[in-house]
Length: 501
Image (cartoon, rainbow, N blue to C red; front, side):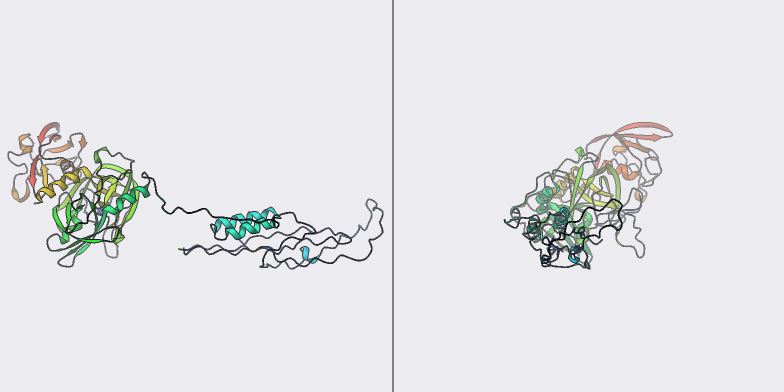
């Protein structure tokens, strides 16, 4: 979009004539006047609140504005050569008719007043004019509008109109710094440091399916941290590449991925030297209201930076990729930083530039019906806390497979149960409570409704799973549950499950 500055049109204002033999009283000089919660979606696809259906979202320079200075001055009229009239006695009060008004020269305002373009003319040396303040104001306004595009010319014009023709006026522009540096605490400063460590991931499956996502440098060995749903289509038989902000592109391969956590680790096949891993923050210390900066490739627009705040913590989010019945669960950081399809896998930074989360999902109003476009940001974005993502990444780098903490019980995904209800039976007819598992040893039974995980209120199955997966196998937690209308607590030592089942 371009903006245009229109020139102001003014009436011609002639110079004051030389003094005639019988000095007339000039008329006032006319002045010129200017013209007048539905399904949530991943950062790459639809994502949902617990229980809801969810999907991934994986000038030319301004031209000088011509000004309309006063018109060229008409030549001064020659003085009258007749003798001065004899002095007349003053008229008596109330005498009629009164003496006739003095004649007004046509060039003192009695002309057509048509707008005239022309160069300013120096005032006559016979009678210097009083400068008009509004002329200087007009020059200042125009100079501000065109941002100095014709500042030098206007500066000279203003000085000339103020009787400065005997001297010279020089208008000099200040030097522009060659390297403008932003402070480290600014968004621009954080972005400048982080962008070289953020990559745009292109994933193309063997069947032609694929898409674009984001990742970031995890270590100097060339490991890239991203979302599982970004690379899932090309993980088994496909092509993966990572493009840095400087345009350099590198082939990559999957080291390991965790579908349940929605975390994946890639490795550049021929990593460049001098890789700078992004610093990792502490997602546990994040507070609601803290500033956030998101970097990614929304709708394929690489190296996009958006800002916001932490809107909430510990948001239970269940999301699916739309191609299977398997969901991912997270106890997410919620942010209003703009996140769209293509932001998935990108870093969510704090004000100091440390990674506090991996952008993964968005809430969307799109129902995915006929004629509806892909989901976009409505200010409800969700990120996997970096403390959890770091643990998963270390597991994937070491063993190539994820490890999940479990309580050894199957819970329903239904809402409005007042908590996470242990099912009557497990998958495939197996017991809902694993014999001799953590829950069984703590005394939990089918039908029990878990209402708290340590001090966190549990309102559904996804909430419970999201909280469990923020811990590690072997951690001891306290579960509060209801049975037959009574409330009880149980201490549970979390077990483990290896791989995605």
